[in-house]
Each structure stands twice: as structure tokens, then as C-alpha cells.
Length: 158
Image 1 (spheres, rainbow, N blue to C red):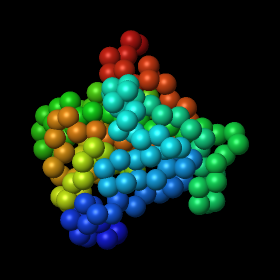
Image 2 (cartoon, helix red, strand yellow):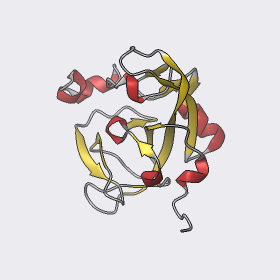
Image 3 (tube, rainbow, N blue to C red):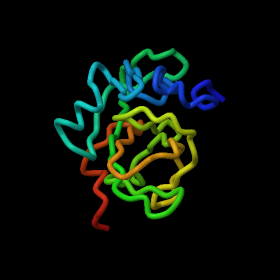
């Protein structure tokens, strides 16, 4: 339990905490963005649209952020395209093909002061986000390994 989960109104002044071992090197959150190795994910969306991917060195677990010499990590930014029913989300990216750390998913682009609730993606993948998620919101999701944008296409051929 964190302060921002107990008092979500604090999210407008301090970012939600994150597990540094799940994100790429030099990641730090702000109240409305995530900066990865000096790159704003919101700016990346401006340049590349969604879904987009940023790849950097992974963090060696338990080192408080020391970059790995051999492993890579990625962050996907996807847009909410549909909320078909309560507790369900449809993103413009299919993350079922990658090793996503959905427990670390976070809203970017705006600060929400609503309590976090569980959601499920179309394939049943669980994630927890503020309850006021709407169509058009941006979600940043860290992933293990290097992810290519083509891996996120919603309509994959078998």
C-alpha cells in the first residue's frame, strides 16, 4: 500500500512509485509522464503515434537501477481504443505476444486522482489503473527484452 493508493489526490503532485527492476535503465516517472534514458514517452507518442516502443538497457535486479551490460528492456505506449464493459480495456496494441510487466502499467498524459481498480485486457491479462480511464488515454507498460512494434499488431496472422 502506497501513499498515492491511499490518497489518490496526491497523484497530482507526486508520481506513483514504481519497481525500478521492471523498467529500463534511467527511468523516472513524473505525475503525467515517464522518462526513459532521457526520452519522454509522451514526446515519443507525438513523434511515432501509438503503439510505440522505446528500448534501453535492462536494470540488473536488486542494484537500484544499475544498467545491464547484456540484457535489454522495453516500454510500450498504447492507446485505449475501447472500454466495452466495466473493468475491460481494449488497447491499440496486442501485448499477449510479449513479456509485459502489467503490474507496472501506468497512465501517462494526465494525472488521475481517482482510486486504482483492476482492469482486464481482451485476452484476460490483468492490470491496475485509475478507475477513470477513458478512450484515448495512454498507457505505458514495461516489458522484458527488446520488443518490436510489429509484435504489437492487433491483427496478427497465424
